[in-house]
Image (cartoon, rainbow, N blue to C red):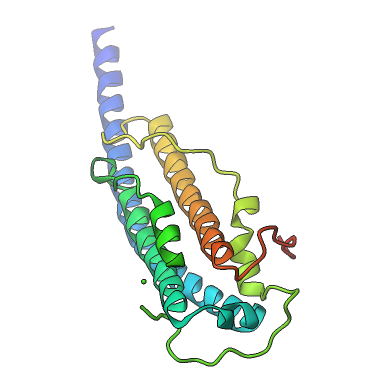
Length: 204
């Protein structure tokens, strides 16, 4: 009986070590993934906002003063940078960024440096949002992500803990995307670029 108990304990220790190793590999892979995701999301956000302002609603964009356009563009860039940092913070709960009040960025956008440079807006369809930004603004509908619980600091030692860690991380990523989408819309709406009530997005 003692031998059987000892064997079970050894098996459990081996399982815990295997799970810890798997978690370390997951952590490393997610770290690289989140860096790339943050860069891609930031670039797509800037591009999509540029297309909305210059192709979707050029008259509304040109109606803003030069200073207002600069502040709008800087606010979009800051939101993208904030999202980059937040993605990585999900892996290190102890280093989680303080709750950034995106409202401050939104408010400042109405009254800060160019992202779109000197590209001249082109005439566009005032009724139809370009496809890239339809994808961005519809994230709040496509992602039904609840506010995630804090991701555990300790290394998972059981299969269910590893699964929970991954699920919470994916929830946190989805929440960041959803919040970024909503905040970007608020900035564009507050500046009068897009209507307060957006048309339904196609394809999602």
